[in-house]
Length: 198
Image (tube, rainbow, N blue to C red; front, side, top):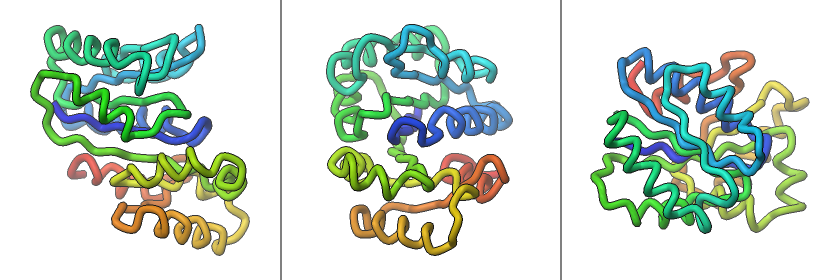
């Protein structure tokens, strides 16, 4: 089973992107499972994602990259034996970085196919977040193979997107960077092509 690890700071659009991705994957008859690491008592993300045909598991009360490593392994085992998905999409909390989750995945003894690490960058808030929580944002970007710059429709000037792309290029020069807007349908097919042929 393939694993798509979709990270990004709080509010970057992870759940919305994952929902769109799971719907598109289902159209290709792939069996999709989603693991959500949600700190809240009410699983808002899980309920939203549950509207898709994907199997959704929620992990609470800790961060998937540290306290919940055992829970992640158990969830993967459970999914493999009870659902046998082609694809597992993991949505860590907004404060996790992909490298820590990758270390947690190393504890899984089953067979994994390709693993793709994706980070979502919130276009209208990026430069502000970059100044306030620079180390976390940097870590999330530098560990990603693919970076989606989300909510591009909210940028007031085209130069802002260029400024964001330049910062990302300095941190992760080999990452594939795709600006997207799910609201306006901008580059959605290109986003999906990262995972499937459309």
